Image (tube, rainbow, N blue to C red; front, side):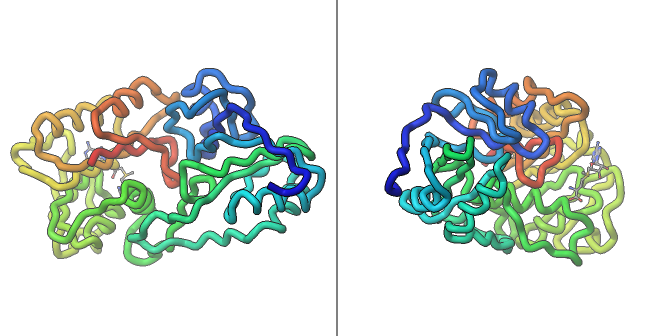
Length: 306
Ligand SMILES: C[S@@+](CC[C@H](N)C(=O)[O-])C[C@H]1O[C@@H](n2cnc3c(N)ncnc32)[C@H](O)[C@@H]1O
């Protein structure tokens, strides 16, 4: 700890809400201590919050007398720090300038999760800094940025699939079979096919012809809800990006779970209007599954089951 910078525990957990979803995080947490733009503090140990993009564990409160003292105190804890500034921008950036630069790179896909410890900090007021050495995401503010392919895929929807596969640390192996529901125009199908997997692309709308002609891809131009799992047979990955009510997607997921014919799932749950927290809890309660709001998600959540 830097000389003169007094540190004390806060008994809080910090929750950095995904952009635009502060109300969702506050609703999930119930009671909170403070809301600073997207950064929310609540008493006690971490509580479940799927709309949070980065959890700040056991943050410390540091009393700092100067910019130099603040930077020295942070450097004494660990090397890498991400600044979340909600006010006092000039002072915060002067402290940040005295820390090792982060320079996050655009990641290739596939990529392993970074292992270097990364903390988060903010200024509560000119002389009080809140710093969490440990956070839930290895990416600054939970924001994963990929080196995009601007030519092959027909849209950018594949980025959320890349993000989900990166976070779960698994991806289709060459020869595995992926069922891509709501596949048009074909971003996810392209990304799945790139792994060497075989793809069955299902959509009522046609696929981009470039995607439809890929060698290991079969197109079924029909409703995903009319598919009978037993007719399709076993699949290694069931992926869905279908635009539909969450309740309808849950019914589809349950049909495939009951049939025991899909080994792994990656599904986008899309909300229209108000967020339906109750249905999100139903998905989260499915054993062995994980529910998260990805950096590349809009008003939607990504549900995975391995
Ligand atoms: C967000 S887009 C999917 C984008 C796609 N994942 C990609 O990467 O290009 C949603 C898709 O759901 C499809 N959809 C809506 N209802 C459907 C249904 N009942 N069965 C299959 N697809 C459906 C739409 O036609 C639309 O193409």
